[in-house]
Image (tube, rainbow, N blue to C red; front, side, top):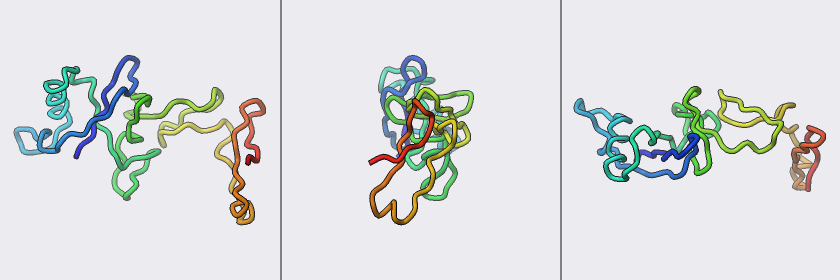
Length: 140
């Protein structure tokens, strides 16, 4: 199955549909995104350029099964399509965070949360982002 994100205004994902791979085959017998887009336009009355193929197995710029990552993330409703960087990314979690386009994810201005010790993991400790102080704090 192939997956396509349906784009609305401002390149926001408003839906995701599956498409049988046979409906994407071009005249040369090869899967082709544009063929899938045309199929979706005909059957869903939504413009072909507003359907963008996405990969169910891609998350934060990596393929979960070791394959080739495709477009940063599997598109979800509310995600944004970034045509310039050829990625889908989720809503920005905090004002200060910046988009890492190579990993298709938001990062704090000071980097990822610190690692946890075995004792902290056993105690279900976690770090939470503090937007006011721009720091990672121990949460509960």
